Length: 170
Image 1: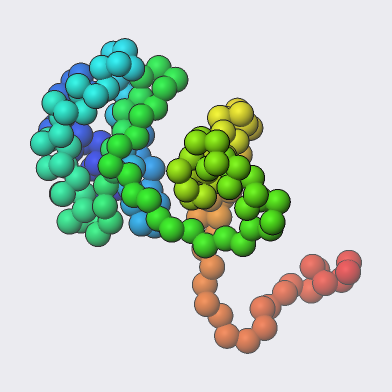
Image 2: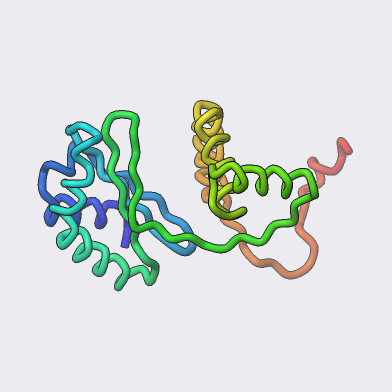
């Protein structure tokens, strides 16, 4: 199922209130996240979420049936994005004493209730502070993926054949 098919399902099955533009579709190996743009205040998202739950779940089931991965949803009002129904996945990492102490300090003062939530808080704070730079990086990575997709690698046996004019100047 391509993004265009997902967009068509959204247009056909979700109300106009959650379709102020094309949905943003983010594909990950373990989940698809669909962000619906709205032309309403941020405070309306909880109501719209509830009003569209049944229709969103129908769309999600159809996408999941075709692609075999769960679908998560979110809505965007102006520059504010609210995600819901997203997965949390354990991530193994090695942290030094200083990093663990920082996480424990965030827990001790009540900013987070676990080291995991403290680390998530730090990641979100970094992402917020460096959002413009991260947007640039996302665009660059997307362009790199597009360029890589143009390279069609074929399995070959033996050494590559290099024309003599390429090796003469070496």
